[in-house]
Length: 374
Ligand SMILES: *Cc1c(COP(=O)(O)O)cnc(C)c1O
Image (tube, rainbow, N blue to C red; front, side, top):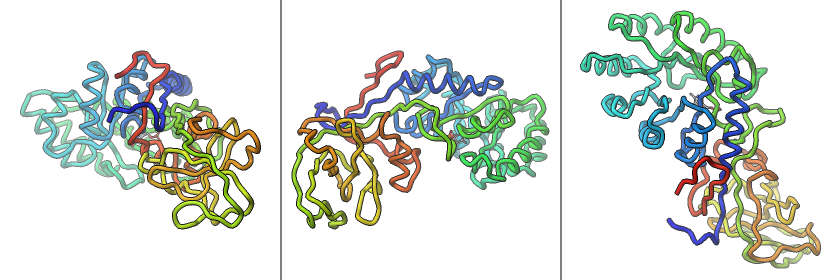
């Protein structure tokens, strides 16, 4: 949908994205630094994000689905693209045509891929994904012998062996060490094949998690990777919405659907034009029982009053006193002053969910990029 520019405004700072990638590349200096740009690059836009990361030096990209891989291939003809979901049944032809490398996770996937290689007399590149304790996608570690046997009998070697951490956001969690030990045992069975283990949090946790390629996602987009630590990344996404009305409300009155927020003092409220239909989660609502998210108005953080509705949010701006905002002013809902993670914490969720939910009616602007996308 084309926009008039009058509604909510989502600004993606591609310069910050590039800086974040370079900063992580420095931390993982001994390894290659990939970029995970699944889910429309964590809501920021797959193609613009990919072009900015590529200009910053990234050459290895990870998407979740073949569709994302095809979209990325269209933008970056030379990129190395891994598909984290693996090989979708019946899709080997497409992967090869688009030069997508599946993270092969099961014997079915492996057999289909190898059959395709045999048919064409070529070893098409792919990664092997081992499950080291998450019980999500991946071969089990005791599949190593059969995986090796099937591939070696055809002279097939994977481009990379990978696994994924379940608890990297909590570096002290014992499971990190257990998974690391298991992955090391798997990697030993694939001598001379590059290995990849760390997501953003793993990358920030320590050298021993880096192996030959790291796979940061959330940290590139400014989100918090490790819990309980200061987030060193630059914010990438700024979300703003216009004030539509400023009004007075009296003690004892309520705000919004369900009358879930009652006013305990004469107040001033600002109504802004953005809601859950824009991906601004309804769980960010602020009620009498549970404080919700906040917004920055005239340089000050103010609480969300009542439920987030489909298209509107009410802010309690009483604390601003005489410095009252006026209709048309923009309010920051995410950005340098209201972090994705603070807002997500208020909603009882994670920055990942909030970022990937952002869609809908925004006027999207890209700044700081190497190229200005349409
Ligand atoms: C999403 C994902 C990543 C990136 O994780 P972040 O926590 O966003 O850094 C890395 N590897 C796999 C397998 C993933 O699914």
